[in-house]
Image (cartoon, rainbow, N blue to C red; front, side, top):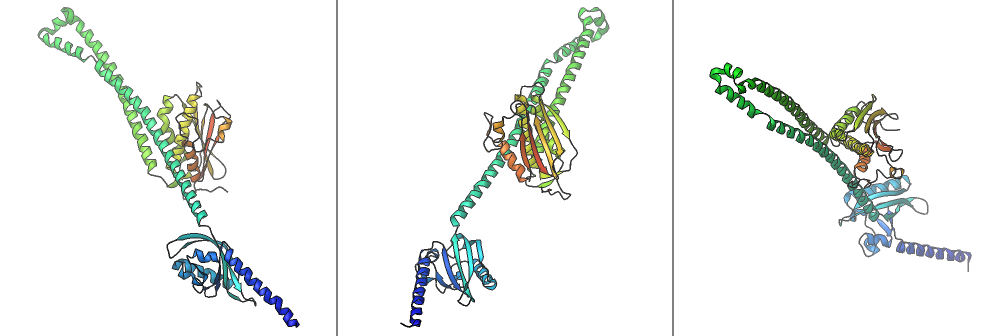
Length: 432
């Protein structure tokens, strides 16, 4: 056997082995492999690629292009990517693509494309490996949808909590209205109008000799003093009724203010603007004022001069109303004679403003501090655990945060709402 013959045998065997390895690879690789010429025509594909394209045999795909299987837009984008790979000689790695097929399917895939070279190193086309990630992408989309729905549900629950708080405070004011109307009704019923009518009747009966009647008749002698007592009675009754009427008007105005404020905030959903922290805190306090007065909780204010915050009015109201309402409950349940809720405003780190609600009430056990903002966590028998959770979410959505501190049971609690300061154009100062 000649040397040439000896050398040719291994080469032939090697070529056969290469073809066998490539064939085995293309027949069994689970990902989708393709080889294309410079015109984008398929020259070799894996069996998985044939099946992915809805075909039965490799011969049905060879010589065809992506334009035969994908939408015009997606096929053109794939062609542009391949032309860039051939022009630059650099691979395209792990590109996520959403593809619409001509048969109506939609898939997601991680695409890898590389230049295909001949034995001289010249680029003669491209080859690539595609990994289908459709199911994981669908799961990701479903999870994101569920997350958004949960956030929306929490926000709605938080808004419902604010509405519940508004109704609760309106209910407290209505109780005062009921008391005032009862007092006014009782005062009118007890007014001695019949006695005045009887006195007037006696005067009419004796008008022909009124002087003699008032000075000599036993009943007539008592009439001036009786009229004087009626005058004092009517004066006192009038003063009491006027006082109750003024209280009635104040409470009606209070209800109108609460409802008007709620309507104003409700119409500002989604609008970020420069807001005065003191005005926000006072509005939230007014929304809770009836309940605070009813439970004999004293409100202490300590507002430092600070810049406006960039936030949404409705969301800040949702948070502060909830915090003040909770602080009122905590102060009332604490059992102290001096029930106090402190409202403070101060500057935080650069570009941050702190709105603080503090109470001297029942406090929070250490084991609850890490769970207090969790969805569904509550220590109230009738609570649902949405209030603080939705408040924390609302703060985060405004590029802020909501935190809590307590030394433990019976030692009060401090909730701090941190919000970004507003730039001159009303936008937020983002933290570094």
